[in-house]
Each structure stands twice: as C-alpha cells, then as structure tokens.
Image (cartoon, rainbow, N blue to C red; front, side, top):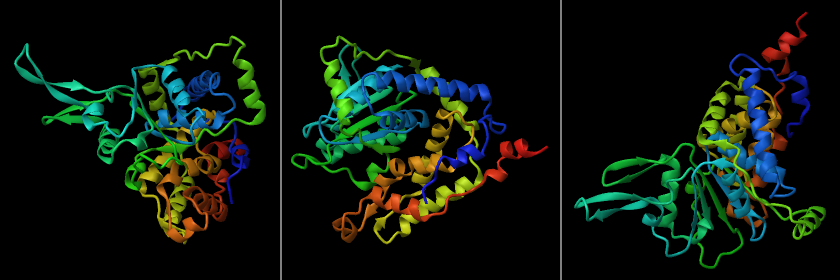
Length: 348
C-alpha cells in the first residue's frame, strides 16, 4: 500500500541522526521554501510541480516537463532560472537545429591563425530546452550526452559545463507531426518527469484577475551557484535507513518483473529515487528519509523509465499506472523502532 504521513509522526521531531546538523536542515528548508514561494508568485496553484523541479535542482539532475501547450511549462522553467543568480540560456528546438548549435564548434580565428572552440548555449548553469522532441535524434543526443557527461569534447579537448548545471526540457506529448520521440534509453537521463497541468477553476479565475491588477510577474534571484552547491553538500548527511533502501530496491525490481511492463527501471532509477528522497526529506525539515518520501517521488522519478508491453499499453496502462500499482501492492516498511532518534526519544 502507499506510504502515508504516519511514518513522519512515528519518527520524532526532525533533528535526526549524526551526519546532518539541525542548522543545516533548517537552512535548507528555509531556502527551499523561499525558492518555492518565489516561483509560486508566477506559477499559481502548482506547488507539487514546483517542488519537484527544485528537488531535481538540488539532487543534481535534470527535468522533463511533458504537458500540452499553454500549461506554463516554459514559464516554470524560466521562473526557476530567474530565481538563481546564474547564467541561463534558452534553446528553441527545431528540425533544422544542428548539434553544433547547442554544444559549440571549432572556428578559425584570423588574428591568431588558429582554430578555437566557440562555446554554444549549453554552457550555462540553467539550460531551457524548449520542445526538445522537435529536433532530430542526432541533435537530441548531443544535448543528452552533455547532460550525462557534464562536458563537451571538441578536437580532443574536454570543456566542462558550469556547476550547478540543470537542463529543463519541455515537450508536448500529443503533437506528433514534425516531432522525434525521445528514445527510452535517453529519457532515462532525466532525473524527474512531471507535468504542470491546467489550473483549477478558482486558480484560473485568480490568474484572470491578475491580468489587469498591476501585479508584477517578476521573479527575483535568491541564490547563487555557490549557495546551491553548499545546500547540496548538506544533503549527504540526510540519513536513509537500510529498510528504506530495501524498499527502494524492491520497488525498482518490481518494475522489471511486473506483468504489464516490457522493461523496468535500472539502478540509475534506484539511485535517483534515493537522491530525490533526501531532498524531499530536507525540504520537509527532516534529516532522515521516511517511506512517504519514497512514495511521493516514485512516480515522477520512475514512471518514465518503465515501458508497458504493447498489450498493456493498448489496455490503458502507462508507466505511471504500473508504478502506482506496485506501490499499492508492496508493504510499507515500519522502521520507527529502529530509528536512532526514535530510540533515544523512547529511552527513559
């Protein structure tokens, strides 16, 4: 069955085991909340997609925003970039886009009489890849390779991209004309896939009210690249109990053996789920992971790594539905009695 918040109540007040100090977690939670609130000023009524995108940022991964046009995918990505005092570049993917248009190329310098590497737009801390499925597979691969390697090799010389490095890619899942579907092996390189979705009725009315209200849609920068790196380093001390690790592996292995799945998640998915769970816990003010952290993140982290069989797909099963089915079927670990903090709390 799905994890609930009961685990959070069982495990105490959030000071956690040795490894992450209380001040580290408080600082992380405060900065995460400020970033979330900053972005929510322009992306109204979508706290979960915002939180997932920030989770990918601090976990050191990349985001795939897959949704129909007009839901605010590009606006969300831009708001994230504007919240950081880092370089940001937007690449509009089109069928005629070449790999060198993204990575850069060797050009002849007449002054020196030598060839020099001219860097492309991928050399930015935040790269917005708009409508990534409109570019050819060769161009898609050029970006996805940089996402994995964090460098571009030109004329035998490696050129590293900035740190932090975040790619936010968008695509429309419905439009098939003039698009090139991302291969499953390449989609696996995105840490999280999520959707923004249309606003609820009341939220939609609020957006319409803002149209002539004079409210500013400006997102102010809150963090530098150094701030992001420092906050990331504090996540290493967020404790993951062995039973949670067992739970993560059981979920991932179940995606490989489910009768509706043609292929499941690899170890990359298991590592991604553990990394994201640490961020999720710290953003909630805890220095340890609970089962509900894993349950909340399993679908956005694993669903795009699970491919249904043709029969299951015809019957309406998706990767998300398979992961949800697995979560419902698996027992949730109850490790409260073994958690260091819980033990200290109960010991007279």
